[in-house]
Each structure stands twice: as C-alpha cells, then as structure tokens.
Image (cartoon, rainbow, N blue to C red; front, side):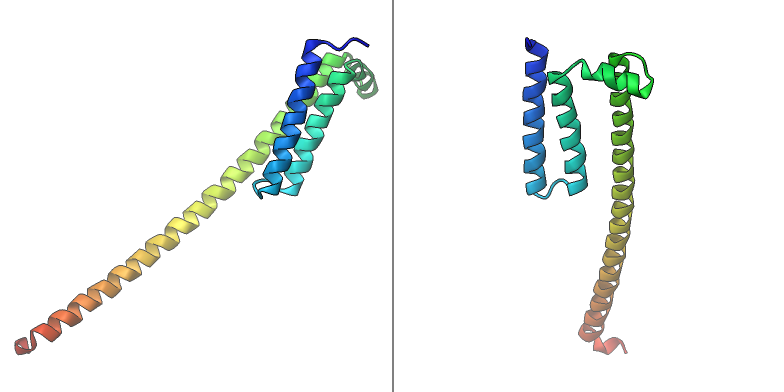
Length: 131
C-alpha cells in the first residue's frame, strides 16, 4: 500500500485537530458532546485517508453510487449540522446578552434614582432656612 501526500497531510491534520479538541475540552472551552462530535469527524477523516476505497463500499451500502459522492454528501450533511449548532448557540448568546443589557439598564436606573434621592436630601440639609 503506497501512501500518497494527501493521505499524510490528512492524517497529520486529523491528529492535530484531535489534540486541539482535547486541549479545548480540558480548558473547559468545549463540551463533552462537541468533543465527541469533533473526535468522530477527525477519526473518519483519518480512516478515509488511510482507506480511500472504503467510501466506495459505504456508497454502495447507502445506495449513493460513487465513493466521492458519498464523501461529499457526508461532508455537506456534517456542515449543515455544524451550521445549525452554531446558529442555535448564537441565538442563545443573543438572548443572554439581551437579558444582561436589560438587567444592567435597570440597575443603572435604580442607582440613578438613589443618587437623585441623596442629592435632594443633601440640598435639604444644607438649606434649612428655605422651609
């Protein structure tokens, strides 16, 4: 079995990506679920790089036809899944940001009212002759 340059590049890229995913998980920047998803994706990339004809078998089993078609469809489906996950994450972040801004505005408003009350009480204490 002769290993081509693209196979070496894909294997190295897969190993680096798995390592970075594990490091991000350890740092708390990635959930266990996303770690498993990325781990699976990169293992598949490494496997297909080592055994490119395996896509032909998977294509026949799934009824797609050619191995390259199978790989492209699989990549497209994974891309849609990841875009969907990112969209949901962005929506959640927008909701959290809206809630935080609303809470901050209320806190500032309440602080402003307290400062106005303090200024009024100081001015009343300084000018008792006005009564």
